[in-house]
Amino acid sequence: MRATTTCYGKTKKIDFIEVVIHNNNGKIMKKKIIDGSEDLDKSTDKIVNFCKENNVEENIIVEGVIKPEKCPCGCGEWLSRVTTDDDLGRKNNENNVEIIDKLRRFFEISSLICSHCGKFGCLEDNYKKDEIKITKTPEYYGIITKEDWKIKMDEYIKWIFENKNEVLKVLPNLENEWKETCKSVRLLLNENNIQV
Image 1 (cartoon, rainbow, N blue to C red):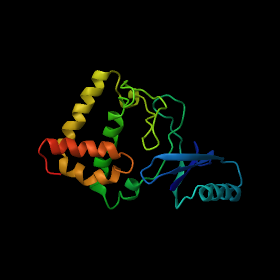
Image 2 (image 1 turned 90 degrees about the horizontal axis):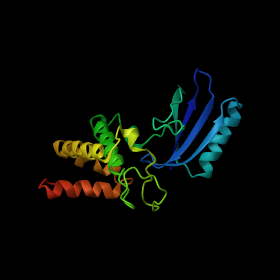
Image 3 (image 1 turned 135 degrees about the vertical axis):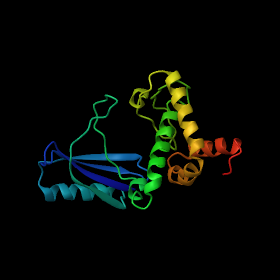
């Protein structure tokens, strides 16, 4: 487990501190909010204790005081920051970051059709332990109808074929979180006589 600690405020003054515990791929497991008006030593103790209680191996602290951003889906939540393996590898893996980010977005969009009920944009809580729960609505991705979704999927699949070598190179970075989807991408490329 890893933690990302971020200080939030509208000015340089800290309004609150958020500690997000997540796996190395960025899937959020737990969060803790600490009031920014608390004594710094007390806040630090709370952060350390929270990390210890949850077997955190590494706590990455985001530099500076960040202005909180609301989630674009309109749920009222703010966007939590997490530091993924992808983020940590950005300096060494500069060319792959854009591919990883775009591929992850494709995976998220492909999951807007519920694998349980087949409904478009279903956010029902019927996920198995090893499945990723999608919490963003289609509108978050600029998708309104199922037809919009099909068009967007076709665009991404075309992009995957155009960037097949780069896509295959970065798939291992996403397999822990998106095992079945990575398998499907490999199968798709293999069925179209593309060496994998």
